[in-house]
Length: 465
Image 1 (tube, rainbow, N blue to C red):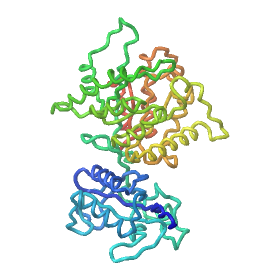
Image 2 (cartoon, rainbow, N blue to C red):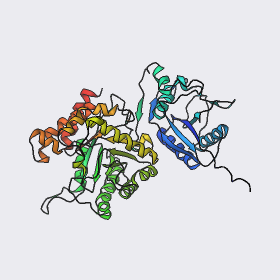
Image 3 (cartoon, rainbow, N blue to C red):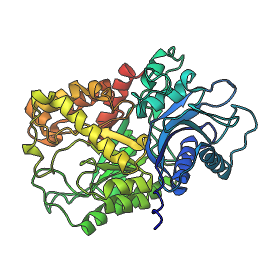
Image 4 (spheres, rainbow, N blue to C red):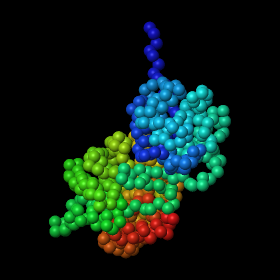
């Protein structure tokens, strides 16, 4: 009997991604989706970095990144992989008029397994890697401790990056939010902080409590300076029962649809819509109705379908740090010093959530982080998080990602200030919002939009210039 055919061996390669025409991030995402469709599975991506052009300087700024791919359905050799990538470029309409000139999409093989390959059409490792920060920086996110040249195993990717002279214009990551709003540039020191307004669609606490009509509430948020509106239909306060799926959908979707309808009015300022949910079906329905961002307090841990759903939708997701569930998190606030303490615990667990999202197919450039104030953190622990936010931003594995901070009216503010009523915690909240901006937050989530927008404007003037 003849031996059964061998299974195709998985090949691993690293591909450079670039674009400087039109919807630059959109072109890169289309190229990644096309690779997936052709069996060139995108396993992980770097952040996307905005960079000045190199070589041909009279052209627009580039968006550059890198991805790790595995060819699981084929045994493409290097030249066959090159042919496939060039065919993807062609299918997306690339026309190469000037060498190293403008292009809507550029896909280059940087590394292929652990081989050296020389051909008139292709050299592996790519000859431009050592001199190009726009290649090395994203590659160092993926494989900082991997040698580029197999014949020089002591020269690691991170070493090559460190050896480059500082850029005249520092590179910044880019996190897309929607087609109608610029991406977050989390490493741009002059970026402005987003004010996210909280739109709570849960029932009012008593039958006699009056709710302001939705339209005027949204208009007031926008007039006060909100750039995002976060819509929630399920309270995450301790002891609050979980509502049925249909009820959460009935609460959230009309608000999404109303805000999205307003955006069709040319006189209305663009606003980003976030849906605050840990259910994949709510996230999917909300994105279909027009939401831009999925804000999951569980970091994708409470619903196993959430991260694959967000990946399939191509939406930006905010992964918050939490332990357990809203019902159990209060008893899970121990961060032993032997394991690094509070900040190390939060960072380590967020790194794990980022990796889970990447494993599910979420592009790294679509991830926002939230330290989860009040969630599995009690009392002064929340103050410590605000004090060490910059340390979290610079933690290995979390660098370059944008951060959302939600401190508004929370109980730790009441304990510090002695104000028991949440609605009266405006002054304490203002201090935490200013601290969040100083620590590097990109988004602050607030109830009192008018007041906190003023705090943000002043804090940006002090720390973002």
